[in-house]
Length: 515
Image (cartoon, rainbow, N blue to C red; front, side, top):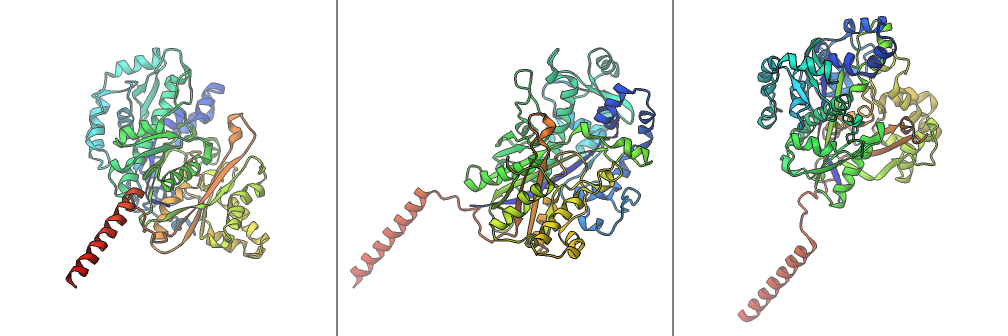
């Protein structure tokens, strides 16, 4: 049995006020240099919602534009707005901050989110008109409280403030008096991740055109951790998000691996389905508030807008082979093992070359590669260069070393097998998976046959190991082997055979009696 990708959801949430309030670059600056010129400049460099929607990489992320639209466009991209930009795309939407705060409130199960009643009244109607937001979610939004109560909680009870258009409209209270793992800061971080995951989940189910009850398991692969002082990372984001999204027939768990976690999670989901453990599994993840405005200093130094102003979320529905949708090939998996080493060549060899050689495939047999798909509009001004381009050049160098291309063909290889990055720098979000939705469309349309998704992660950030990490997998054109309806047990097969044999014997007896 094999697994296919049946649908995907990709969402962005424009959160300009959280850039200043929750992004670690800004919150750290407030501590070490509270009167800095940088902090004074941040508000002047924040984009409006319309500007964020018209930003072409954002349009590509939600499926309202194609990755091909960036092929011949020079950076910067931000000064070339898309004229017919849309809030909604094939895979999801770019949600405005005010509506998102109501979704966050709907995701709060312990009454820690307090919103101003006038703010709720002004936003609830348009929030409820969003087709993806069903009545069960709207009904979770409470009326709200007086603004004076919110101010008091922020001033005297260590609550994390919630702003919209630079105005205090709510707060997140601590969930415990002394437990730092349930502080208002951590609760805020986790609720934002959960809410953006819920949004992505609902769009993935919609794209897959399946009933919510068909989903049996959910895997969350974000970079956050929820728990208390006795088990600070115990989880479970997956089940928490599934509850709000209405996936009442699902259970789930969390997978963590820094930026590589999404690729690990998709392989796990495909393995569950291939083994027959679960018929339909969803991999999901919400965004990371800490990384908002992460490269803001570099952007402002170059008089650019702060482009890291959106939370990202994604979800992928993995199900039994239906004979149509693109398959996940579990026979070809790249693995960065403990003994691989951390040199760029060793990493790329383990994730790309080694699995292909085992399958008797060449590097050129993969139509498109999706490694770290960070948007160069963000990373180049910060001095990190064009991350996807660097990966493609390393893969091309391996192809040249293997004699598949000559060194002078390297640029053609990058053009033909690579993609221009469009993903927000939300840590785990860019690592390969942003291309899954578009890749499946391209495969179904007959434009390509195979893509490789490459997830890489920096485990040393957790100070537990100096090791690097990474896994890769291949999505390919469906072989046409429909297994989705093959739900007959071995005993049922034996019964069918026995009945057929009995019927055949009866017919022989009848025929003999007539003679």
